[in-house]
Image 1 (cartoon, rainbow over the protein chains, first blue to last red):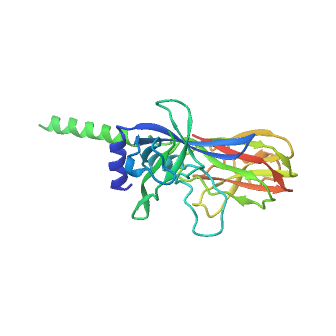
Image 2 (tube, chains in turn blue, yellow):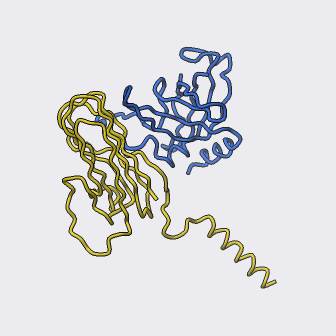
Image 3 (tube, rainbow over the protein chains, first blue to last red):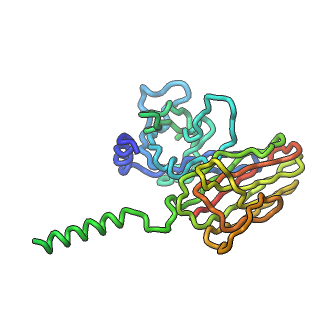
Length: 131
Length: 158
């Protein structure tokens, strides 16, 4: 494992647990594919408010450790066409976050930064979510 | 002095032993999603990407949730395992569905079979017990065009 991931995992020990949720299907046949991830969360800064990010959003950083351990979001159908979007990266307006330390409300992911990659490995994921 | 060195060595060995999974335990136990996808047009043995790194797995409980919407005709989910790093896949469980919501499950053990057996791909609901590698995947075959229909395959590996 990358030293970058180790360092981030150590830093996130002071963070909180989130549930990263991908919903599959449409009502009434919907299934959740969840993974519990360690995260650091803070309110967005004024200078970060732009586009889909509003002042009431929260910013989060997570490491890929728990996602890789759970092999989230699991088996995927083959897509054929390349480049294939890495299914492990949270998806804007599709995936949701639950801050279990506060409540069980689903909060939409409003913006996902391109993941940080070192030596062909995702080492850090940042995104914002509503609320 | 010699006793101190010996006790330090024993302490180090115990520490090392605590950090290593005991022999016979699965490397990454847990519940994995082998598939979670909507079914629309017919699928011809569509293999989902595999769940890997399951070395030491001795059993797996498989739960297949077929949430029916409308349309369609038949759907089959075959769970397969590989013992050669994903080159060759063997059927371990077969689940068939039609035009109704249903949940089916099976338990496959890697410890049960004590005799040799001739492998045969599964063609009806059932399992090939005693055959469990370190990778799992789901293969989905459907006929007819389903709408708002969802299949979810989860495996508890232990």
